[in-house]
Length: 238
Image 1 (cartoon, rainbow, N blue to C red):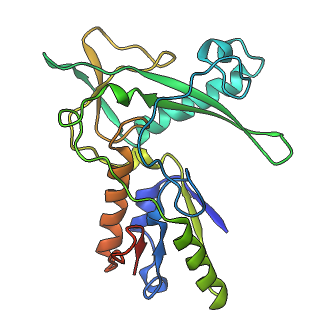
Image 2: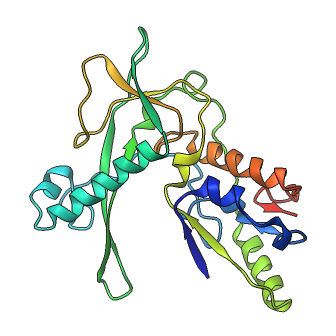
């Protein structure tokens, strides 16, 4: 079954190790993004241009939509999640530094019968503006190989084991950042005084190092339980 977790770090810290010893952690508990159990962003790409698509509206289209109240609730949920996870602090932008723009990206999530399941808003930073070696270093994060996924599922079926898939909500927002990064709030968020910006304490979607930061955050917890990666696959722990 799939368990949706809103507070990933609390879930990791509260996991009952008496029921997990001897098991295999698969997929590095990465966010849902790619195939099967370990879905994540292998890198950062520019956000697809919005507009003209009712399932991917722009901010102006959202404000004119008959569902504007539901969209505003989605915006409040996203911005509230940033505050709750202490993703940023409001700070002066130092001389010689530049605040990178961000935007709200909107998505209508639909069910198998094309029914509307959720109105979703997400703050995405234009991370492609940052410079490697200055604003970020390594960005690689492992993604589970589809063959390994099938082998793990086959072993589980053969041994009649329970298989659990955990979907972390706003996973990247729980990953700490070592770099000093500044971001301008997106249009639609409360404005800041001139010279002020968000200084990121945790990863935002669009930051190039976000997948790696989240992977290292999860790996630290799994290693603390006594598990080590299998060596042949960076997303399998035994």
